[in-house]
Length: 91
Image (cartoon, rainbow, N blue to C red; front, side, top):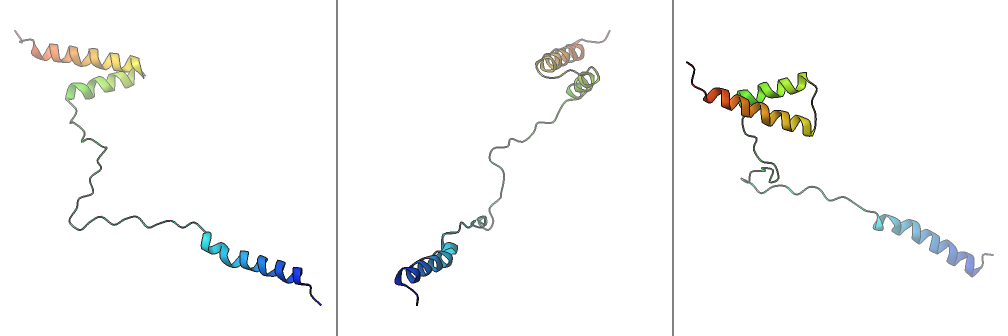
C-alpha cells in the first residue's frame, strides 16, 4: 500500500520533470533584414586611403620598433617633414 504523501511526492516530482522543458531558455533566430535593405555597419567609418608618406613613415616606425605614444609622435613629425619636403621647390 502506498500512502497518500508518497503519491503526492511522486506526482510533484513527475510534474517538475515534465514542465522543466517549458521553462528552458531558447535563443531567438536573428532577424532577417528587410528585402532590398543594405546591411551596412553603422558604427564603422570607411577608411581613408593612406598617403605614400604615411606608409613610408609607418615602415620607418616599424623598423625602429616604435609603439604607443612615441609612434604617434614619430608619425606626426615624419608626415610633417614629408609634407614640408614636398612643398619645397627643387632648384
